[in-house]
Image (cartoon, rainbow, N blue to C red; front, side, top):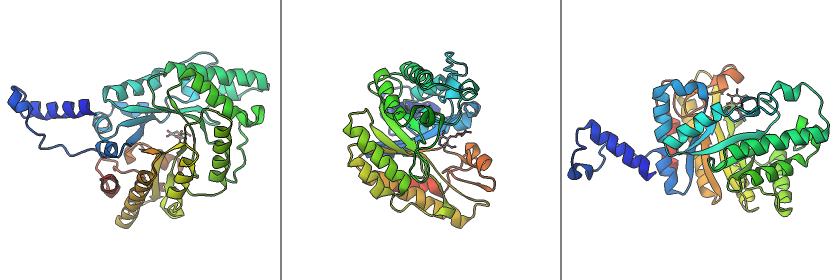
Length: 347
Ligand code: 9MR
């Protein structure tokens, strides 16, 4: 952080032609207001954003990404299809590009994700596996990837989206072939490969209390009791104005804290039915403010990550036709009311 501040100050001074002498270097920065990351750090938290490789050629985009947040999550670059496209053949190109970018900006990385049912390579999904074969495939993938990023990432979403809405285990290739024990195994293998990374389970629709979040609470409690290396639970928080704000979020975060776990809001966006009106954007702003305040109110809530920062690169319009405008910056990278609301919550 100090390095970043120094860098920003140097940039301002150079532009102003003042960088020559020691007196000039001592001049205060007249321009720069604290970023969301600066504000979050005052609370001992981070403020992060997802990003994705194709958009890194957009320099206006990367400039803001490099300055406003202190935590980066690769939206796709560390997923199985990208990292092990053929069995036993690993490709770190996309993940490394994002880790390197984050390092250059003195940002940390929340790595995402090791075990998921989606975005798997064809070689894995197109045939039948015995339990012992699949277990070996999973162990090798986790061990190799976590080792590759060892010491370079702050946390891993080890298992993503393991439960259905009613709180039963999702019938994934992992669950169907290996049974529920795959979760503890995955955590243990990840821990062996990088003992310092914070290891998370991560899911959506668990922000409010209910059957799905209860399932995570039960599982987390059980894993902790058995000494399985679980450090946190990630609440994705893909929210939508038309479904109402998850009012029990803060209490829910707190009950996970009481298990001795970190929590985090890991993929926040607040979508709406288009067109975006002034009223909807104002409503959205209060949601961003309230969810940030909820995290700040709970001691072990480590930080907030938005699922990219600008509507220009949001996943929403492609997945929910007619919906969008979900992020705090608009498609022209201009801050929206939600951005001011985040600042207020973090102040
Ligand atoms: O942001 C990701 C998008 O680019 C992909 O097309 C999509 C494919 O499912 O995955 C998106 O990220 C997801 C994340 O990995 C897990 N939680 C839900 C996110 C939104 O779909």
